[in-house]
Length: 369
Image (cartoon, rainbow, N blue to C red; front, top):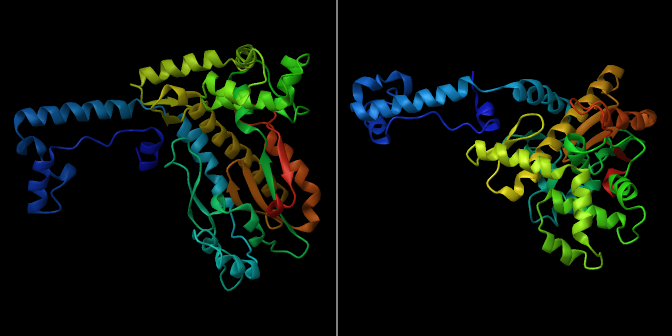
């Protein structure tokens, strides 16, 4: 059964319809005369019906051949993450104070009920191009300026709002999916790891230079724009080539371009098989990596939350929000000692990428970060 979610994930066109003029004629007779209720072969001109039948056969053939592994094995299982989300406790004093300053409406989305809790956050994960989350109901933490984050408070005296945050997730995903070697647990800083591996004897190529080159490659920036940003680095083309080779970027670009062309320049699939709508060649890598990173994060959050559930501590370590690559938790004081372990659970054994350690940091005062 093809539902609307599958239609969105796989970028399927809407099912073919008879000519609008014929549909209107039947709708004018009765709203019930629609779709399969109408014997179209008896009501349409022969040529129009043959075209309609041909389009339906093409559509049904595409749908019947659809590989639903991504939907069944990644999308549906990670939906469990959103079932764990609970309402956040709101500091009423700060809410009233910040509401006077708010011109966007984001503060008002945190409005507490009589018990001091905001609405439970709900998310949409299919309407954006790469699957990044959008808040549909509840607090719009994704858009809340950091200076207002202390509007959140723990539901316990002595508790804390903290985040488990993937660091440099997209470059790690790039290396994990197509690079030359996995990032190990001890290599917390991927940019420093690249510098040491490739440019240990080149003082011009600092960690910051490496970071700018990597991000430029991820976001499809041109070599000319990179030269303008790094005017003091000689032979920047050599640096870019070295980093590109380390990530096997040319092979990835060739693979994605071939897939994009075969799709009629409509989409590529991410590492796990989700189709990602892509209109221009320079966004191929970015769309592939960003979409894959969304799935990696949700798979990691799923591991964390299932582990908390196994420990029987969901009433003391309460998930509140997902903020891009971070999971926001309300943590009771007597469970602080578990948090570093949770970060390791989220960083390892990501489905399909078990050889890479996706380092997570712990921000113990989320509202101050």
